[in-house]
Length: 167
Image (cartoon, rainbow, N blue to C red):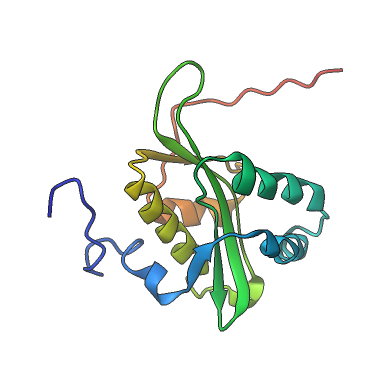
């Protein structure tokens, strides 16, 4: 095996990635997943963001050249999802990077490694596409998600996001 290939066959190698995607069925997202995604997000956030998810699903399925968004199912039940996209550059720079737009795990499947399996499969798919970096944005006080991402090996970036209200 070359030094550029990842070895997912040894569970002792990397506790986060090692074979978790093999223990939880993960598949590519399809249009029929939209009602489950909306219902899960509503259960988690208490808000109706169906318009956002309709736009996001159209983007990840029809506007993106590479489909990387995934769904996890356990015993035929919708357990979670991750929406991501591959970017090949921004701000005049070329870079193979991917962005996680949103991730959600059903509370009914909490603590069963659903998020871990989704992220693990996403990283395996991105590695096969030779994507070098994976980014996401998180609210500073979303401690549960921050902890999950830290355990997955994410670190704060050197970029600052600036916001200005207009009007």
